[in-house]
Structures are given as structure tokens and as C-alpha cells.
Length: 282
Image (cartoon, rainbow, N blue to C red; front, top):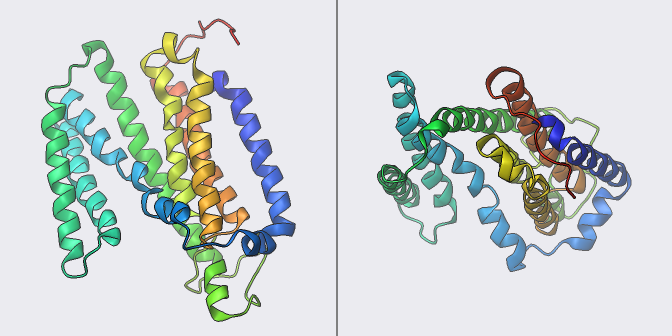
């Protein structure tokens, strides 16, 4: 399957490399030019840019719970579904327009949503021949998400790059450092961008051909283009918000993309085999 997306993967890496070269010279000045943190466009994506990735456990857990043959695996799926829903609500609570008990309200909202999704999932008819594939893809999606978050957080903590908006608040850009220079653990977490990496989890749409190769291999350009546009949009808004530099969002998006690609490579080699039967239509 990975070979079917090879041209798109190459294009993505070329664009990322070009962005990093440009960022080596333009990082600070580009943020100065774009900075407009009060604009509704960046504010919207700051609140929603990570939400899609936070739903992976919720929907993946439902699929595992209903379609896995192994009882223990079904229990694990239920745990992921409920736990993921609670975490989703906890994440949403940061943006609630209330002060008292906002975390509690957020978690309760997440749990209610989780049980609703679990209930609805019971009545969604899925052909039995797809059950195993969907379970494998759900497990892969959850694993990829955790890998992406772990990698991003480790680099964030150890790189210690100061955010543009923090330097702006301090009234000095003396703390600015190039993206390729680690600063060590100091509490700053600008590099790389977590929002962009989470948005890049939308590249899981590349998994669609595993479900229906005849349909989605012919539309594989769409499986790539939609998440590319979404991830790029989130990345751009992080620059406008002053939360990140061009290099931050480039590396964040690339990490998210690479974890999906590595996941696909593992699926191709060990778990799912898709025959190369698609015609080479433009």
C-alpha cells in the first residue's frame, strides 16, 4: 500500500525540507509579519486543531469493542473508548467559558459523549469481512497517535525553544534561537508544534484503501490532499497566533506524517496485504 502513495510522500518531504531551509533564515521575521493573535481564524484552530486526533481513541475503541474476536481485546477497546472520551472532555474543558468546575464539566461531557458513541456504534452495520481489518486499523491508529504525542513531548521538553509570543510579551527577542539548536530543559516548548503534529493525524485517511482498495486507491490523491490542506491550515494559524515558528510547525507536521507512514509500512509487512490492482488513471 505504501508504494501507492510514494509520489505524495516524496512531495511532502520535499516541501518540508524547503520549509526548513526557509525557516533557517525567516523564522523570526515571518512571525513578526504574520502575528495577529486576536484574529478569530487562529483562535478557532487553537481551540480545535487537536480535537480530531483526540477522537482516535474514542472511535477506535468502539470498533475494537464491537468487532474484536478476543474478549480481552474487547475489554481493552472499551477502556480506550471510555478513557479517550474522558480525556477528550478534559481537553475541551480548557476552552469552556466557565471558571468553576470546568475540568469536571469537561470530563462529564466527554463521558456522556463516549457512552452516546458507544450506544450508536451498536446499531451501525459493518460487513463481517471488514471486522478484522477495522480492528487492526483501529489498533494501529491508536498506537500511531500515542507514538506521535510521545515523540513530540520528548522533543518539546528537551529542546526548550522559547515561543514567539513569550518573547513578544517580554519585550525582547534576545531569547530567539534557530530551530536546529537545542536549548535543554528550561520549561519552554515551542519546538516542535503539537497542534500541527496532532492535525497531521488526519493523514490516517491514507488507511482508507485498506478498507476498500478498489474505491480508495483510485482516489488516493484525495486521501493525501485533504489532510495536507488541513494540517497546513492549522500550521499557518499557529504562526499567526505567535505560538510557533515556521520550523516548529514544519517539524511537528512531519513527525505526525512520518508516524503514519511508519504505521503503514508495518501494516504492509505484517498485518494487511493489499494487491496492487489499481489502474494507473490520472
